[in-house]
Length: 302
Image (cartoon, rainbow, N blue to C red; front, side, top):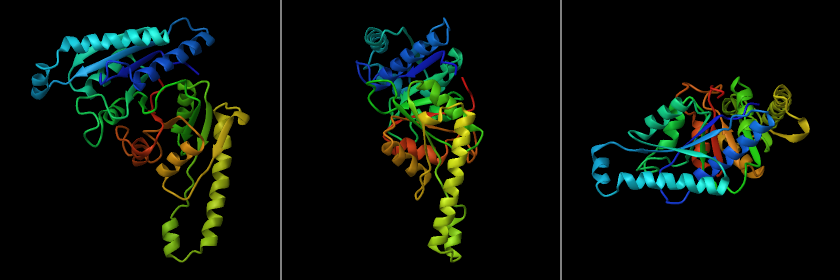
């Protein structure tokens, strides 16, 4: 389980004080430092705080009223605050251009293991349109993207990993353990009866559907146990759950609340993904409706 070597934090500088996004990233950097020490790795994980100044003509006009030097000073001030509070070294990077392109490009330049952003985005109009800047970064970047929603008081305590038993599942579990090595793990599979709607139309009784659903749940439980074993997880320290009766995204949101999870790890590529640069409907709904932080995985292991 290799720790992250570089964390890139995209900030919108919405406050002169560090927000939950920057504090969460600093807590992660602390945990990665401890993990690297335990792995007898001398190099410390780096943390970079960046802000992209938009470059449209309207943005140029806005700069007449908001000094670029003030933005740089604010960014440096956030870095100092995080260093004093969390004891981590924070680099800064200010640039001009489309926030999505600039964050993606700088993540590549740093070979970042993780990109951290808010749920609403990092641009001037963050949260004003459907498809936030944060979501666009998650679509564009081949790297894991953490969307922060909750206040960061302590490291992640309990992580929910919904799986579909595709090849992505093992990677998602590994990523969950890397980002929150001390957290307990909940593996979940949303149980669905294939063609249930058609069977109802064909006159299949409710009792028969219940039997099919229970058979599907037993199969899912067995496969979750096998997946946990293949991942090297201690069976006594992992919770397995197989809820049913609603849309997968709704079951994920409900299970995260029921299990008191503070992080959900979602796949961008799974069995149902059409394109690696699209977020599936389930992932998008969990991002929109869930109350926890969401980590969007990818095929890149970092």
